[in-house]
Length: 203
Image (cartoon, rainbow, N blue to C red; front, side):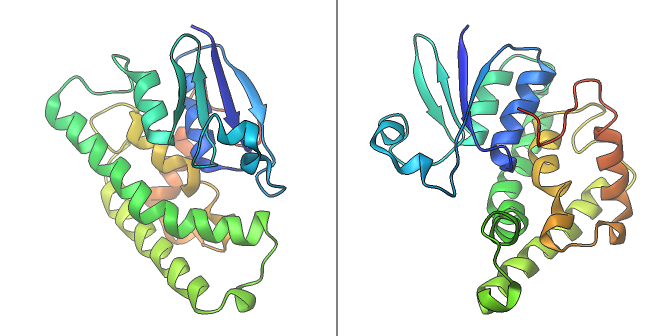
């Protein structure tokens, strides 16, 4: 199966896809897009994803697939990363939905403003305050969810861990103090010892 991933290396959403590809030892090609310079707004890219966002996975013989959780779900179907038990699989999706609706809009957005766009909190005003608090609340929920556990669901890594790890481990770049969340910090360290782990900066 020929796979081409359109990605922006700083993106946690794209990083999730790369981690799954590496965890499952699936060969792929990467097309790095400079989203700040408008690379995803060209007619050529919009023909692949009309929403103008990365990541996009192009699967030979099938076409393009957008949205990070759709991509990783497709890639991991039937693999060790998706629990066979229906209840555990539902818990995995519970965490993945939480990531997209709570954690990513907080931590991911603040990090993008500060790191990719070079904005200052005082420039952003109330919207920064609101998004930063949203991320802090998400970290508190994650801390409780990881208390006494190695992984979010069951006894092994699942898509839930990959989805939450992507933005959580770089939350310091958005101004969060991860040291205040010991269970989260221990989980991050545990994840980084996985044999297929690679940094967010690597294609």
